[in-house]
Length: 326
Image 1 (cartoon, rainbow, N blue to C red):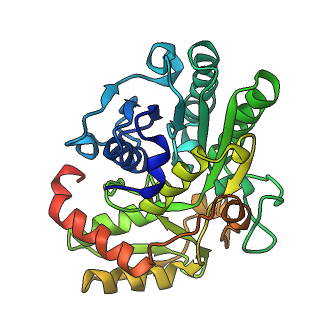
Image 2: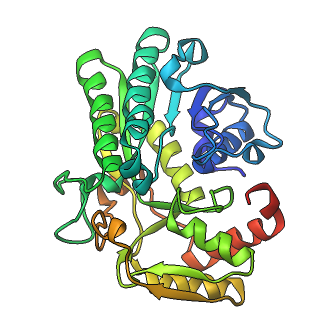
């Protein structure tokens, strides 16, 4: 998988944390295509998004380590650090907030300290999330939307984003954050909904099973992983992005409409709309779509992969490789 924006990083020393996951592995592939010197750091936590299959065929150095244990040696000489490591499950964060705190705060502080020690000139790009906004008053939501997360994961991700901003403001590290929305594509976790509801839906369809749609009327936006990879690469090459935090996003679609589109892309299948469980209702954010105007103005980025083609590509990949992800 090649990406034109990757050319700006040709031959450079790059580190990707969380690099065995969906976005990190696609970044590593794009960087390898332009002969970047790539190191992947991943704790390979079973409940998270890492999958060794995602790194098949990539000539990257893999450091299997928790960021909280210190990674100064792995960052030595890095020019760019794509920091994608973390825990994403909202329900898991509510059931086990201390583990979420470890992966999304303690580990992030440790990475920044390691960067200060051994890669003080590197650009560090943090994968933040739209979840930090919580319920928004209007959509699309821009970066002026108040930060008011509704779950533990959102609180910790907001804190991690602020750690990155602080290390820029106080220590001069070249940090920036991209606030991601629902990212999907080949390589995502499909065995359950820990890395997003769409992965669970795709997993069910590839097993020939029906899937459950909670609620159905909530609006969400999605980005294909290739568009997200391009966003990170464009941000890494844009000096004016340093110190900022930017939304990604796409056209809103209801969960019911998304389920119909997925079944159509699959050539069949079924789903059931069910009420939101109480534990999910308490932390549900309602409708959301991100306004990415600020990032588009700065870098020219906008989502290119249409939802129907992205869903078809994703389903085709998992039909061919399901055993590696099931």
